[in-house]
Length: 95
Image 1 (cartoon, rainbow, N blue to C red):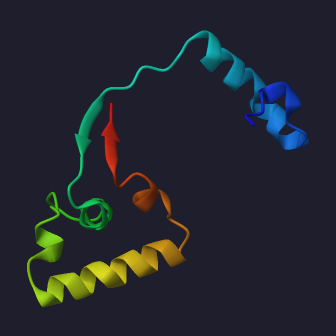
Image 2: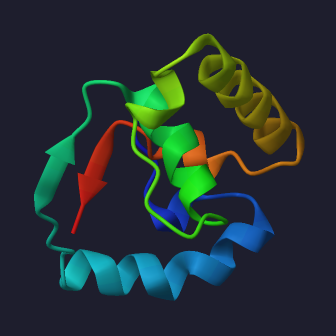
């Protein structure tokens, strides 16, 4: 069963009620730009690109055994630090 905004019992959720109601009146438009063949590699490459002087690609993080070890370490540390959005948005790129 889907709950509407008016049925949410958590008082904090009521803070979002105006946003949800506005979104329902004016639906968000999104265009699928890309669906990634290697979502995990893309997520780590994206995280690395934030701190790199160049764009890091999925191929870069999967090229060698050393690169894969670094990829896995970055994925673990990023997740442990609470930066889960890099993994949540790994599958689709929307505009």
